Image (cartoon, rainbow, N blue to C red; front, side, top):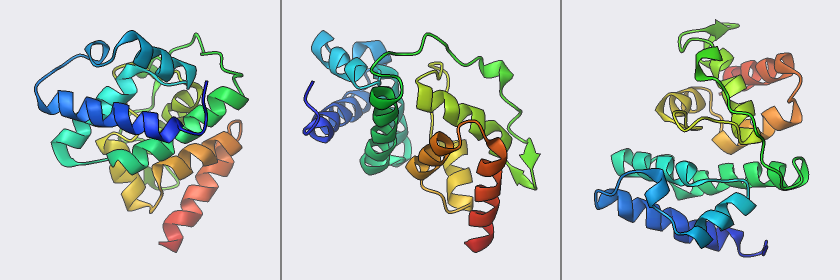
Length: 175
């Protein structure tokens, strides 16, 4: 595996997915050939991640390549250095997430996005969920948090939800 050119290869696949989606192609598994899927897997990613970015990119330009690269770079780092390049066999049960309107310390979406972010970090999101979806982006914008910054925060405090909440409260007050 080559590390230095990860961003370049990711960019090529991102652009390919955006173009295919714009042309009407649907289905994450139809977007990439075996070598491209192997590249994604070797870096802790999958076709669904790029498909979701392509879908949202075509619908409104977000989260965009730069944010996608930042998010997936944090995920890749966790995959290579914490998971030692071995994919998790778990998949988050979407029904286990708190409701979208749940709040903690007056901040809605936060109880939902914490376990969702942990699942993203570990590569355990089901295909039905996207990290940095429209709801996540509203949360990030409202509280002035970059999605990759939040992913990194959750990694640093993976077993301490109270620290995550305190950080978000502080950031939200400072904006």
